[in-house]
Amino acid sequence: MYKVGKEPVLMTCPNCRSAQKTVVTLIPTTKTHVMAVAFIPILLCWLPYVTKGLRKAKHTCSVCGAYIGISG
Image 1 (cartoon, rainbow, N blue to C red):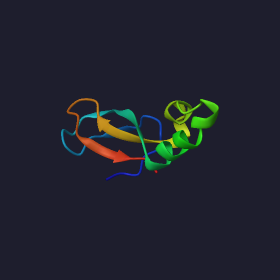
Image 2 (tube, rainbow, N blue to C red):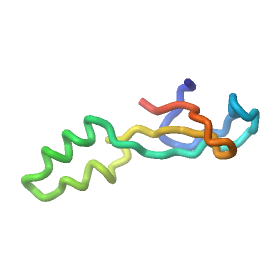
Image 3 (cartoon, rainbow, N blue to C red):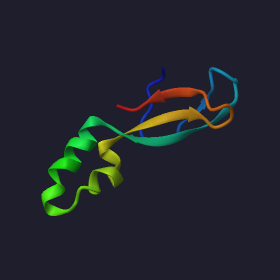
Image 4 (cartoon, one colour):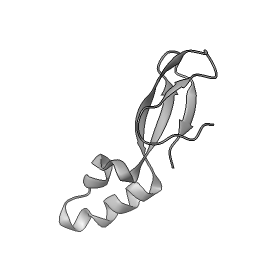
């Protein structure tokens, strides 16, 4: 697993050896769900799911789809 951030990274895939930018998929975490529950009384429970800082970024190869790493 490689150390990556929340933005796509130019790197060589360890699986297919192609030099491409990674594909980033933002995935919710336990913190995202807890914050959503906390925002229910003020009807903003959707807010954590659209906030980049409360989700982790999963990086995969844009060519072969191999898992590269996850932020955080």
